[in-house]
Length: 385
Image (cartoon, rainbow, N blue to C red; front, top):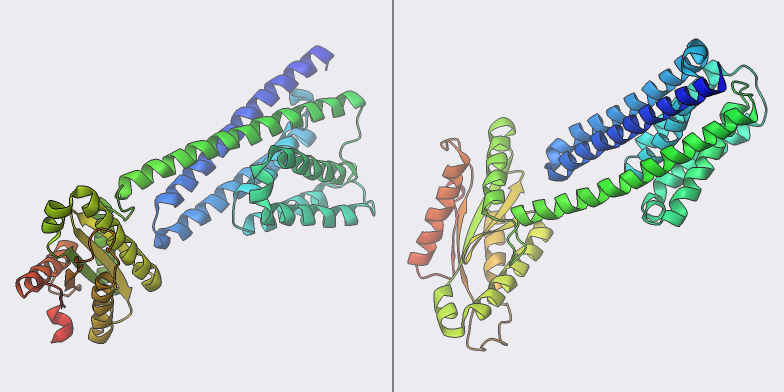
């Protein structure tokens, strides 16, 4: 093949691989965005799909490399761009995927490739193999540090590339002229810069999307989850109850005489009290591994999953909520303010038809508490009977 045709074939294959690489990175980030927005119960499936997609892509690259090397060098040009793609893909997968399984899979695939296609054996392959594995797991463990700094990212990628190139070289597969190696280093450099910088761009897009999703799902004043998220979570909780009998308590909370506070001290003081109550509910929710919500105005909610319906546990949680609010220090506004809340509880029951029925029960019990004098909790009849 003439030099002109070789270079033309080389450039076309390089452009094709750049398109493949950026497309692959986009797919992985799409999966990661799905992971960001999913609940814990759904994340395992998406993580498995993500690992499967990366593994499939690496296997595809190894297959293309084999075809390019052994079946079509005259037709396609022996450019080694697929192996360059493998190096960049391995690096990005290990540093950007938190799952250590990816590092194991990458190592296994490369060693299988070396074992099958090596034409000679050199003893230097043994220490090189240990170095390769050590690099992979170091990249995994230090991924956040390495990828956060360009002056660490590119040297780390260069070290991994050098190790893989030496491993391939000492198998006897590639021993060609200097122009061949010049092309490979040029292609590797191009793919490395494109892959790393495109990944950084996608990181920025992902962070912006997370901020947007956070704003859409959380109350801007208290930073608690908002009403829309509350309804979605409550519906999900009810479906878990129906399908797997997963039980939960729903507490609806209302600040007593909050309108009087707003009218007397102003909305800024009212907002400060809302933030204080939200902080108290957040701390309790973190302790209980529960979720806290602002349902609107001075109303809040807490969703607590439990193994069994237990009136004693339910009473303890409700009393803790009441006592925590009573003990809040709002003295800077006025020492005469004694903050209290009313609370109503709902629990899922077989007589319920939807998640709304649980919410309505909590709402009814909340207004019973308010009509009974406030500063108290009314628990679900299902627990008290």
